[in-house]
Length: 535
Image: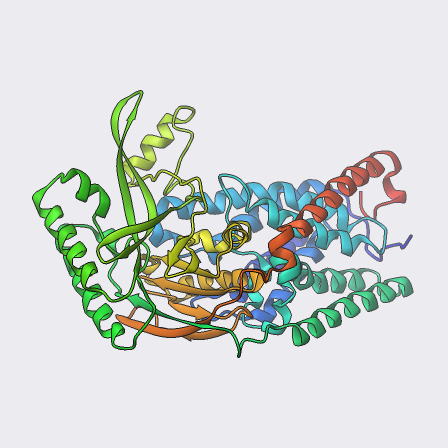
């Protein structure tokens, strides 16, 4: 066991000055968190800061009374996501209030757990802190509130050598290696004279070196792979503004850009999420109004003239008989048309909480009514990871923030998708850094599964990424343009450990965390000061 060189402080002696100092460190941590990801000051983000984000947090939690760590967690959780997710105010003001409050509640639990771990008198404390952090990052991506923005591993999306090991353990392995240096530095500051801790530092250094060597030696050789030419159309009109005139203007831009792109002989043309409005198949089948049917028919006639298949995002509407009568159900969908005929459809499986989906209407009717009153439009979720077939090329089409979830994109590849095609509309944000945040997560889906990934977006970030995570080409955000690029096709027989085993590392870390934390709670209750630096 190792004793910590920190003066024990009780709740009664913890002064206002100390609290203000702690809050200053937490503010620093929240600012580093925001800056390490793409942000308004540096659009690409300052990736190296990701290794130090948790240092001020760990330093504070190594010193404070456990009870105060709860309040600190609430403060840090709220502030960090208010700064980082500033663009939610544009997406929906309600979301900008709700998301930081959710993370406030998460950190109410996380910070006391981390404080318990960091004050455990053992050289293994900093290892367990990293494992607990990754477990938290994984848990917050699960369930109805699942949200992947802000995972610290994503800060390294441009350092391709560092992230190649994501094909083994997903973004969770990348995140573990990112957060561990901060926890080690904190431990060294607390116990600078521990020789055994130096040995632990050497072990971590060897892990980091192994990760870098792996990143240098394992990128796929792409030169001899078959190429596939895609035309990505970025028409830069936000369909959220609504109205038939807006929809017509959007379609006119799509047509002009598509015809220009076809001159470069692509194999497929791809439009963004909800690029065309209104619902094509609904209006084709039910013809609710002459004006909208005229626009839909114009689209169908245009698609007949195209020499290649067209993939696009569209709201797929159907009339369904329920207990409440005949109702219209709309799904956020990716459709493929050939010669004017619908050849395949994928319906978005993972809907955005609160703004696309709220399953608790019967439990919280007042909140449901509040969301509806704030112009929230709900979709019906799909149930299958349906692939689209483009002249024999199998395509998985994650829609919008679905490309931020490793498990979901893995499901496409398990069904033998050769390419991942993300359809996104982020133009509403009017923010390059918001779009870049989204792109930074998508890069990992390519590396995890060793598949090319393209992003067709309304206003950005439209790009093509190869199976090693390298950007092949992109478009300037918030501009009207198109991109024709050839991407490598990987044989469906080529799979990665991550594709086969999924989030195995996160499951392992979660198991270790639960067992260890319960054990530490037991030790603290029974052994007290003998095992922990501060009571």
